[in-house]
Amino acid sequence: MDRKFIISIDGASSTGKSTLARKISNLLKFIHIDSGAMYRAVTLFAKNNHLLSNNLVDKNALIKLLPNIKVDFVKNNIHLNDTDVSKDVRDENISNFVSRVAEIPEVRSFLVTKQRNFTINHNVVMDGRDIGSVVFPNADIKFFLHADLNIRVERRYNELKSLNSNICKEEVKLNIIQRDYTDSNRQDSPLIVPENAISIDVSEFDINSLFEFMMKKIHSRLSQ
Ligand code: DC
Image (tube, rainbow, N blue to C red; front, side):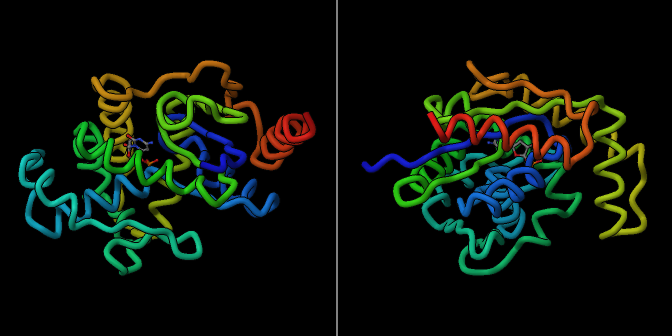
């Protein structure tokens, strides 16, 4: 397998991973894979097939249906079985269930195989929770982003408000706290700081200075 240049960006939700990954991939002409969107697409598939109820996922039924799931990126938009679902996967209902779906080992190995396949033909910037630790432990450069909870709540709240004016800040905070807990405490591939990752507290930067800082690190790695 021809191995390409891989940049991993991990961290908790609403730390700006995807925004930065997108900016970096645009500048370098790499492809950007938002692995969180892939877990969200599987969650949407589960919802469409009536496999989500009362905070529970029908795991066995979902595992059986995994071969029916096709997840792709078309011009950076996530597609589920050939339909653009980039808006649908951001729905609060999907956010409330996605950590439960992401803790199912069969779902993880199904998506990890797809994530690894993206690098057969492309240089990639991939963001998520386990990219530098599990998916690409040998990534060329790894970043780990973290930030104060209130800053993350504010970010997510403003993002959601632009989509849905009825959203309540306390609800957003609760969802982030719950997801942090599930993502960090699951058995399979929990959120950790990957070995050799450059760990950054994003509360200390504005997005442009953070982008410049990361680009400096990437350029120095690319020139080695
Ligand atoms: O980045 P995000 O908030 O869109 O991710 C949605 C969920 O997917 C998140 O709660 C954890 C899960 N996830 C994961 O388990 N592993 C990844 N590599 C990416 C996301």
